[in-house]
Image (cartoon, rainbow, N blue to C red):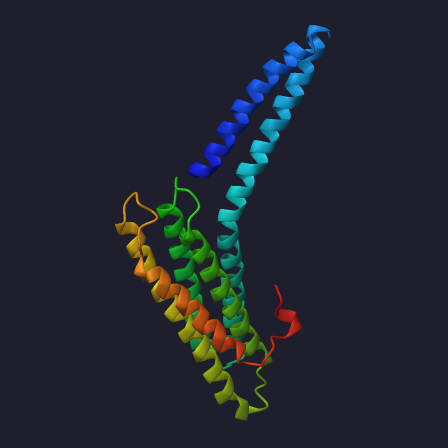
Length: 224
C-alpha cells in the first residue's frame, strides 16, 4: 500500500472517531441504541469508502497487466493463424510477443520499486509507456490483418511499417529499462534526479510525433 493511501485512511479513521464522539454527545436526547445505530452507520460508510478506495488503487495497478495479457493472447492467436495460412508475418508477431512480455516484466518491476512510496512521476511515465506500447501493438495487429496475399506488391510496405513500429517499441522499452535501473539505485530518495526519465519522456514524444505523420488508420474490428 502506498504512503498516500495509508495517510488518507488514517485521516478518515481519526475523523470518524472524532465525529462519532461528537454525534454521540449531540444526540443525547435520543435513546442509546439509536445513537449507536447512527454511529455504526457512519463508521460502516467510512469503512466501505476506504475499501472502495483501496480496491481502486489495486485495480489501477493491475489494469496495465490485464491489458498486456489480452494483447499477448491476441498476438498468439494471430501468430497461429499466420503460421496456418503461411502468411509472411510470423517474425514480426513473435517480436511483438517478446516485447509485450518484456513490457509486463518491466511494469511489475516498476510496481515493486515504487511499493510503499507516494505517487511519483515514474508511475505516470510507466503508464505512458504501457499505453504507447499497447497502442503500437494494436497497429501491428491491424497491419497484419489488412494484408491481402492476393496483392503481394503491398508486402514490402507492410513489412517496413511493422518494422518501424517494432523499432519504436524497442527504443521505448530500452529507455524504460534504463530508467528502472536508475530508480533501483536512488534508494529512499524517490525524487532524486534521473537522467533517463527525461530521455524516456523525449523518446515517447519522438515516436508519437513520428506516428502523427502516418495517415493510416486501423480497421474498426481491431479497436479493443
